[in-house]
Image (cartoon, rainbow, N blue to C red):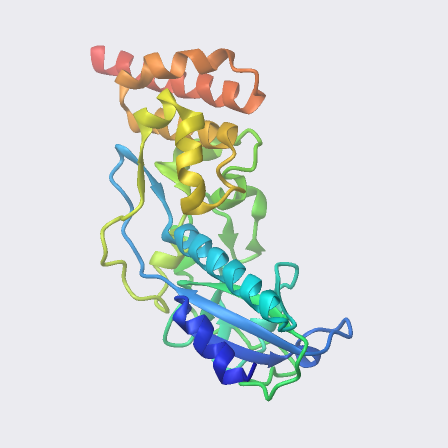
Length: 297
């Protein structure tokens, strides 16, 4: 297969840009051949209203890209083309040395003219091709200037002048199976997966003009979390649709909803065998009961 035929095939699957790189120039482990970066872009969207759980569009895009890449790799294998889908190669250290790419204070990668609204699938091709871009020896300096908007809008203070604090990041806690620290729970709002605060306020990104396209009914998940998790699996993938994790996250959202009508659906989970689900259910119950008491006063 010629490089242009490979590029055309990937673009035909929905990828918006394909970048060919010399693997030896990008990786320090002696890997040779061609790195193929297939970029899938997506539009910025507004957050959903509080009565529904919101899914960040990145996760929709990344699932579409993953499935397209998987199909492409399978087709190449059937044709005997030595190109393999890889998920073990870190791209941030590569991006920050490529012309036209850079990293923001929020640690997210950006492309000039595109911003940070993209997902990348990586392939390693055994063939050595002429690269589209040549990485520079050192990482680019940040292009943020004096801007600190991401610090100012981060709902949990995970970004500041000292760097990125993973233990405060909402995305770090979402669907990881662990109990969400109580100080972060109200900041989670109605986000099922994804945060977006730093990206939506970044001047390198276009404004979020589209309405939210991917929302989930809170009541439906609480009533049938296993079925609803399976329904979400083809949309956002298996890693983040483990039923107990979806349920645990939805209970936080329910607690933030202000809807005391959800209390009967929350109550059974206060005795759930999962410690995370149980803790989140007790918190949600307490939040809604507290709000109901305040209204009665």
